[in-house]
Amino acid sequence: MKNIQLGTSDLSVSTVALGCMRMGERTEKEAAEIIHNALDLGVNFFDHADIYAGGKSEEIFANAVEMNPTIREKMLLQTKAGIRKGYFDFSKEHIIGSVDASLKRLKTEYIDVFLLHRPDTLVEPEEVAEAFSALKESGKVKHFGVSNHTPMQIELLKKYVEQDLITNQLQFSVMHTPMVDAGIQMNTRFENAIDRDGAVLDYSRLNDMTIQAWSPFQYGFFEGVFVDHEKFPELNAKLQEIGEKHNVDKSTIAVAWILRHPAKMQAIVGTMNTARLQNISKAADITLTREEWYEIYRVAGNVLP
Image 1: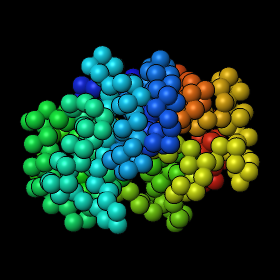
Image 2: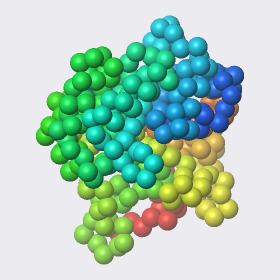
Image 3: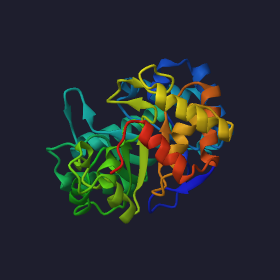
């Protein structure tokens, strides 16, 4: 498993990370197998959020590995907060309370990376700054970042927050490519020339923020998985063809496509299937050619000017 530096931090993280959103659906025995399998594969980064199964995913994760200092030092834990039922909340009180609750559920004294989940338009960045400083000074959180934020939303936070924002977690996959479409199709009248992300890809590279690609197999907004889906025969045929060249399966190539981008992204993979994770983890050792990358991009329905 290859590692990358996470943003401007000193963290060396696996390029493939395990997203734990669905861990709340597993028994502790099943979760233990999943987590230890990931560690054996070199996956050292685990992504959580307070809303995943209402906190149950974090609880099962910690109980499954019988969290203790020995196992804790082998992993890097990330969690997120800010989404509440019917609204978003970046208040100081909610941020600190959410971190405290996650620490309790994860049975750990610190979080390696804490992210603000979806943007709160009522955010008062001064409160976020106070919360981050309190969490940093107490040792409860080592590093900070955001999820689903635009460059200008990040700039607003950076005006007040003292800590580096080292990562931005964004939806990106073969079938969800707006962050690259606008650049490729700039100065045209094509629909995808519209910049919906505020040039977040270039911004992230210029500011050394690691993009964490979530839902690497989804199309639309949680409409389903495109791999082996009958709606996408040409795409799956191309993934199969390129996969055979590299002796891997279609899902592995779909992740290798993300990791090929020179922005040095990290892929957050949510599979709870050990064999599937073993296959997907091989993506870290595959470097697609330019021709292969663009072949997949085009067959997914994207237009080159």
